Image 1 (cartoon, helix red, strand yellow):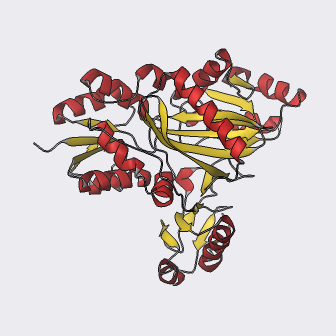
Image 2 (cartoon, helix red, strand yellow):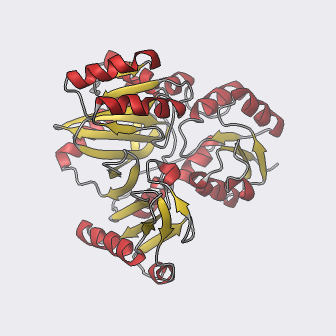
Image 3 (tube, helix red, strand yellow):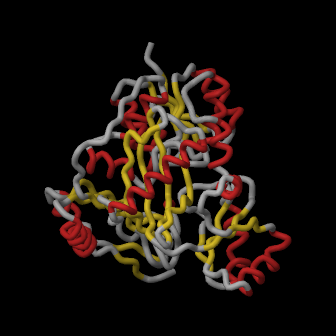
Length: 402
């Protein structure tokens, strides 16, 4: 009998997993509450069930006799995966760990209690938001970061530099949180990074450290990754040591992970942890740079296969760039240049989501992306030049601001 894999989410960032799972012979089911999402058209069967509806997903998984469940590139569905997998005795992340890391408030409290470095933080209650905003302004704690407690993809995350902004953005941030709770925390300057990899028997079988680019000043959304990391050898060792300690204390021993961190004043501070493959096509970057397909590993792991992941000896310098607009308006770019760019041997891939003339929003999070591309080179200097060449030749711009 053909094994079935249930994929929670069918948006752009789930497409790679859906396609790959079908390629390796699995029957793929997709579930989310957006019937127009592109992944539904590529699945063997699609279901209009919210990814946070635990009872609905449990009923679906039982009825379809699934062999595994994954939620690639989306944190909000991970608690559903953990709960349903436990009830059906399927491979999945530990429920207690997921409850901790998928709530930013719970995770910050965990870091505090176990003496892990963390930013100063405070829960923002709607009825006290004016007092909170005033206190942070008076104490000189701005800029700060306002973020939803339970969300993903940088949705509802804002860098706020004035007390008034905290009040102005609070309701918008809360709208993106499953429980309507909002966290205000210290903005830490420093080196932004992501760790993407795999745990086997409690050890880091693979850990790729990237330089993570964010869309400051308008948002903290990810707009790209670069490898190899620009951190020094000693800084990399410090980060890896902190990650090992983190996973040990959490009790995570096997499977994929995605960690955002910042090295501030020489100290690595973990910002977020996910038990799954990351978004923004970071697994494509790992596959290109290292030759390791973490998406395939996660799929096979989810259906109970033994997965062996190891660190290759050599990494190819690679850059992943997310395209977004600095302002809202009408999109334009050199459409004729797409074919010529795609023929370049150093361009791994280039995707544009919308045709010229489309009305677009200012980039604030992953939902606002206009496209993406990935390039490779023999060194970081050439890599940067090639990123610049793609953007210059494409000449993406927004006209007639809204």
